[in-house]
Image 1: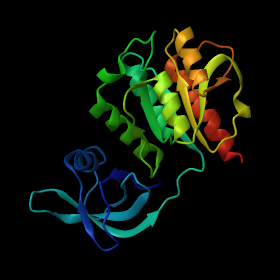
Image 2 (image 1 turned 30 degrees about the vertical axis):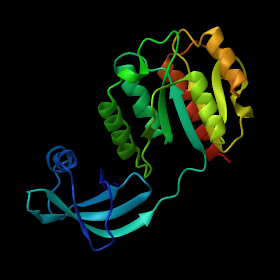
Image 3 (image 1 turned 135 degrees about the vertical axis):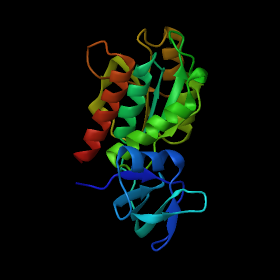
Image 4 (image 1 turned 45 degrees about the horizontal axis):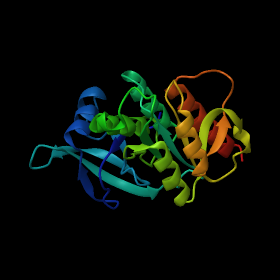
Length: 238
């Protein structure tokens, strides 16, 4: 059984020590019931991972101290994925964030859409970032999924294209997803009502490529996870 993972902002070199923040310490000592001498894995979300052991003592403020025994670097996934979606209501947004982070998506970008039900700027960012972090810990990903800034579809397409990514648009009338073979991909998924005619036209004009993920009408979170999983599975099979 692998050691439980805990996040720290930065890792010391082997032989050094670091103090877990309050939330991580509560999870380690309370939820996981770990104690002095128990092995854990630490990660900084930027590719560094450390083998570590919980210390017997506390720091001056009473924090939980962990001794680092070894540090290594983890490679980024070969395929870079940026996922943009119109946030759905309630727990469905949390589900989308959790699953996309488990699939090691590099970034999740909330977008506003004409038929959207939640304004991208109104999402609870601290909660969303916690969900993304917890999913990375659960999936043992050394690279943290970043929460992007709210934007609109056309702006997202142009920014991702300018950054050198192949931009695709979830679209029932699009081509097969297997035809997208780029190493850096950004995709966008609209609300249940889809993107408006105007939004779709502007996105295609800006350089987006329409891609179909089947004939079924999917919920936002299902479509986003299906696209990310399809791209990730294709990359793993290469």
